[in-house]
Length: 187
Image (cartoon, rainbow, N blue to C red; front, side, top):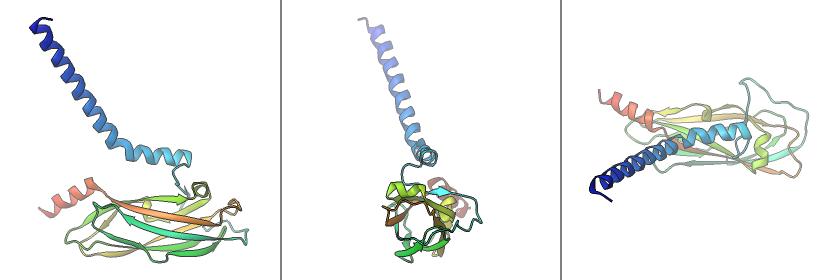
């Protein structure tokens, strides 16, 4: 192989590797939104049902189920976040409220978004949230603490084998919003 062909071959390989690297970065960046769309469309991943605000449940059942509430924060978001009530018993079809508390103990405003999960996974098809802090980005100012309610009901046709449901939230930093908050605070 001549020296010139070898240089062309190396340059071609470098371009291909660079293109693959850019594509992998783009795919990694798009994973979170794509995962949310996939879960919303398929009902998989423990994603509950979301309906219009103002719904007040459907009634029609006297069966009860225990709901447990879990709260975690990704290690790169320095917030405190917890469920006010760790568990409650609710009647199927009746509107219920759960309260979470979030606090930003830092000296700067921070933005985050919550991802929820319902377990067991089959219960996610019957868990209906009408109002939730997870629907929108949350910004907590420096030293701010805020109650974050969730209004929900469990559809009465929940399978009888499900006696307990866990609603879990994890807060993640919104890196784009936090960058904008930092830049605007520096002006």
